[in-house]
Length: 523
Image (tube, rainbow, N blue to C red; front, side, top):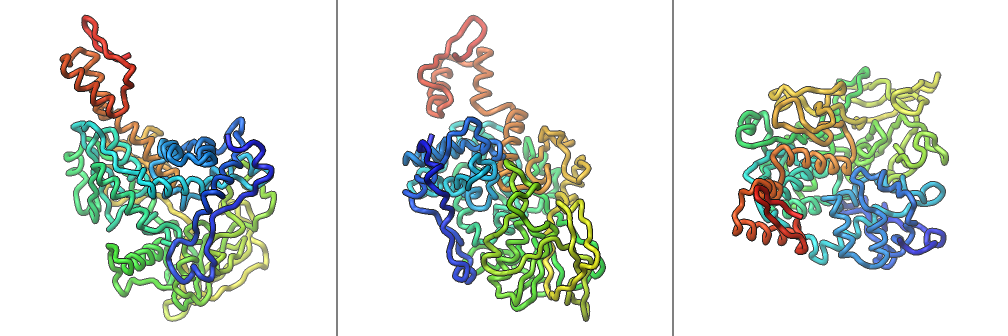
């Protein structure tokens, strides 16, 4: 596995990042891959751990040491097969996943971890260039149809898996494009929307139907979809933004971060000639020439900084309740991933982050915000903050973006119409089975577990698909085997089934069908 002792002599080399002063002038991807030779060297650093904690750190359970070794040996074709066996969309996770696998790398205990995310992205991009990623429609179709509500990563994953099982899948998305927050929340500098479109085109070629601009529960009654489909999967994400209830919140110029990011992504889409939904002039949010204050220090807040810098903001300040990081921070011991990092791509491009601060109110003039009241706090998270006496201060701002997370999925519309049970956090309750309180209706992703990572959303979709497939009676091949077991196939049907099974790779050439007096089976 890798090169013996390579981790002792080869140092980590991460993504090749463009100069911050250059990249802030455009929306092109801000990073690139290292050369193939360097990537092979990086793959050699994988240590063949006795217990590969990277498996546990990855919600998808990616076979990381396996494809690290294959890259080290230059076996890119085999590497994409290993990668796709657990991850439907490595081109997404390789760009925007915060890589909890790297935090769990054993090397991370006292050294820099293996650059897992970069190797993952290199594998899938090699595969696309070489033409190894192609549409693969299922060899047989069931008579079952599934409606997936929500076109984010969880919805895309559950649709892809159920389609492979042979079921006919339709994805209903209320926005003008597939991808969810990957498309409308993540800047193009991190994830070009052409990458999403490339995968969606493959899914369409494989037989999945996408209906855009359809808000289920408003544009189409949920009762109609229940009649139309044998099963429904709700993957609408967690879209109710968490608010900040402090004096002055009603002032103009204070917005949820996602409202701003949606507009910026649509602005880029318009200039690239992609479909976009225009924003009425009176609702437009712009950071150009403004003093921007971002509340919240997570990825969404960083994306707000990135877009504000690209718009030409006068200044950008971020207020983060987390206290400043230390080398031995007890909040995220190995192998847990950190909640914050000392530097981010957005802060490299400009802006100031103030640690350990909490907003206490807003002030303004003529109905618009002009300044923000804040104070220093201590604590390990937003749940145990303690104010520092006498630490109050004021920050001037005429655009405030609230980026402190999400509460739960939207309840109005289909959730209310189906009278779905909810957990104590307002998420759709499934009791760990992906089955909602409504018969034939399932849920996965952030709508079920609350806000999470893109890699977790894909894992949720894959797991949910297994449950739905079983509820529908299994794949066509599974159904065929049941007919074989009760002797319902003629000899000619056996031969036809065997030929199709071998072509699909579900039956090996050395396996044989045999029949007894009352049963037929496979061995």
